[in-house]
Length: 260
Ligand SMILES: [Zn+2]
Ligand SMILES: [Zn+2]
Image (cartoon, rainbow, N blue to C red):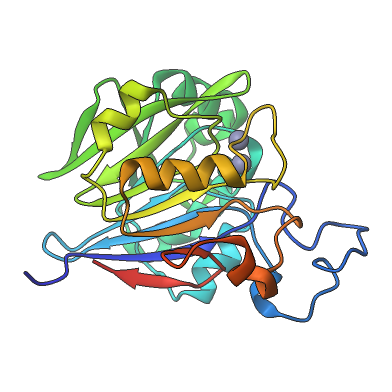
């Protein structure tokens, strides 16, 4: 079977990005370009339906889309509304200049409320369409929803005081900003995911994020063939990849892409 999905990691960093402002640790001072991490986001192209899907609008979205030459986004899936996953929202204005049509944004009902509160100006009437992001909001209320005919499965995961959505399209899954998968969640995706990107913010246990050991055991339990760690802090040095993760797991970096 031919490949159907192209996935690009737009950003692979935790909420502060790496380097961290003011930090002079080895990773923040590293000259390896793979240690420079913008805030977490990915871009998916579904070839058969020719749909471009952006997951989250990070504060670094403008530079990420410029870097990857993106001039069209059909859908945005929101994992949750923490600033590092949402606050690039205003820069969606520029996409409208090319596309001349609004972007469909998909989020949990509570996240829709949050987007409308944080970016209230975007939902008020204006005489000039270029002044505000042009979006159509859709609530995600079911475990499965459809981008035209493309099926997306989601799982709601605990993330501190809120919840984050993990998404699965075909055999590809993206899960960022979660503490853990329950055994019921794991059963749903076990053996059904060949490629997965999942977050690990830190090496040591963290109150609201899965740490490295936890994310690695998740990949194993889901029987994922090829996995990528994302949302990494300056704990992670790309130069130490071989020592940190097993053979079928990779530390992702900004601009990494693969197809399946
Ligand atoms: Zn985050
Ligand atoms: Zn978060």
